[in-house]
Length: 58
Image (cartoon, rainbow, N blue to C red; front, side, top):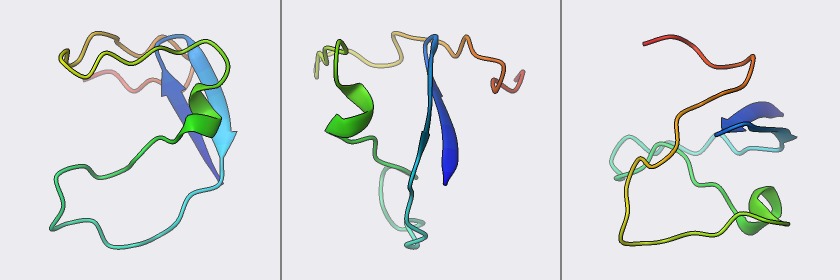
């Protein structure tokens, strides 16, 4: 289980521990996290910043 923060939405999700070091993304967020109410525009990147208590300052 892992806490995920996307914008101001925070949820605890079950994650897998597959090695993704050779892949482009370190994690994938599926439709269960995004339902209901999150729309995805595939032509945009980094349009949201974390706004949860989980957020770690950069």
